[in-house]
Amino acid sequence: MKLVIAIVHDEDAMELIDNLTEGGFKVTKLATTGGFLKAGNTTLLIGVEKESVDSVLSIIQDVCKTRKGVVSMPSPMVGATGVFVPTPVEVTIGGATVFVLDVERFERI
Ligand code: 2BA
Image 1 (cartoon, rainbow, N blue to C red):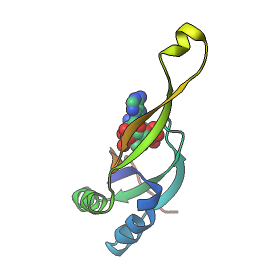
Image 2: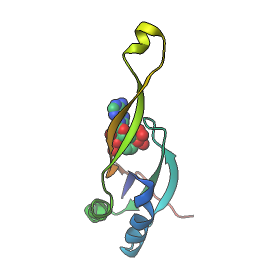
Image 3: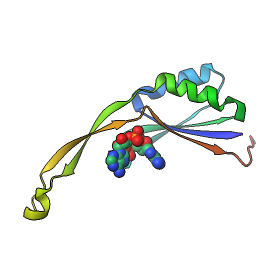
Image 4: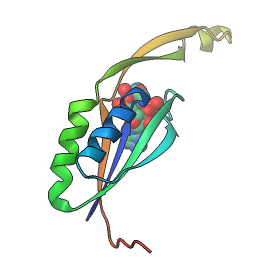
């Protein structure tokens, strides 16, 4: 068995959960926050048989789109003047960040 951990954009999460559920997969949704942008995102835990990992990845690929985000970085002036002048820097977020882990043991009790 494998555990697919998918970090996705909040706006894609509900459609992705619906498509995974319709595909017969079980999903747990966690509300998470990205360390870099400090913005909300969604992490899904999907436990699946090894043979189904590619199907899950294909559903994620169909739904999750890349987006632009903006983060404020201190400008080079801050070192010389001590004045923080935020400079907006654009980053590309997602479609999805996916980890596939081996599951040592799975129990439903
Ligand atoms: P954030 O950490 O908020 O990162 C959002 C986007 O900012 C990233 O998109 C990437 O384009 C950019 N970014 C992140 N760290 C950066 C850095 N040190 N320098 C420059 N740009 C940086 P994605 O790579 O698509 O990541 C989307 C979200 O997935 C991340 O949100 C984070 O929550 C998660 N994530 C990505 N890689 C991860 C990893 N190796 N481990 C754990 N979580 C990860």
